[in-house]
Length: 390
Image (cartoon, rainbow, N blue to C red; front, side, top):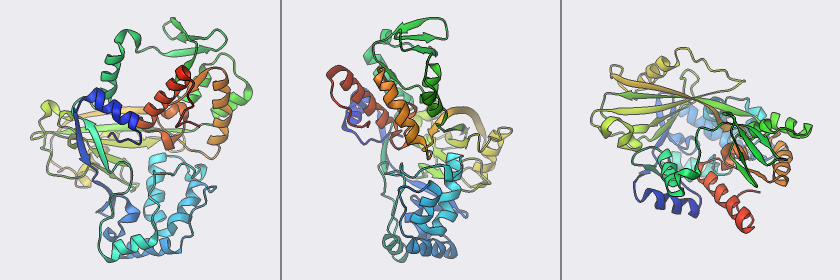
């Protein structure tokens, strides 16, 4: 999905896509106790079983607000109380991050987590009112064909294909000679380097690096995500759900996207009268190893078990991709590590930006990445300070 915090990204999207996008209103849900709870979970407790709703409300009323200096696990307890933390926040975040939550900071929250006043939640419960408008992605766009990659394919074509090289793995960065070395033996000279390579890999490619820089790069944590897409020979029904969250540990995925709903071209022949498709995500890390054997079959079984798909719906295709670098973890010592790495690189004419170049999850969406690229280009060419990066 595509949403934006920045006018520059909005203008780029309008220019390169020229209206070839679908616009959607978010309809997102959390699966809990065989119920579909509108997202955000903590805003819509009226959908919970009575005892669980009471537990969550009481904890929220008794909570005293999270300290920014607290680790993420402690911050959840202090912000939402024991009920919401137990029923949703802890199990879901354990699945999506795949690292111990006590190892994470809480400085990244910003607009990523709905922090809600108990009076608002209590009013929603008593008045039986839905509260679903929170967040920057409550409306979003998606290319009519080609997925989100279509945005950048069109942009690349405008920039000129002869100026862009694909499939060239960088294996060495010589800061003294100002030269990149590629895996095929070729190379390229540079004056200033803007890199979106994962920051730890960029440091690993440097020929010479001091011990504190190497140690800081080694302190960076990330997780991986196994994406399993399942296509069905079964019509896309009148289902308003865009994507869904799954905190239950007995389900393999933490999120499912109703992919055919985003754009008809996401199924063969754009024939949603015949086909539907779902994209599932399962995270893993050194702390939470992936049980890959039979994962695809477990995903298909789980989609039927939760009622998204009929058990006898014909499976047309299953496609799996393992994304090694999925989320940069906002670990407790991340900012200390970045405080070593980023200034050291900048002093040598290297700007590490983008989701894994910056290693800052709180500004890791595609609109953030585009904004970082625009800002650093203005800095290099015009000397204008970056607006987003600090």
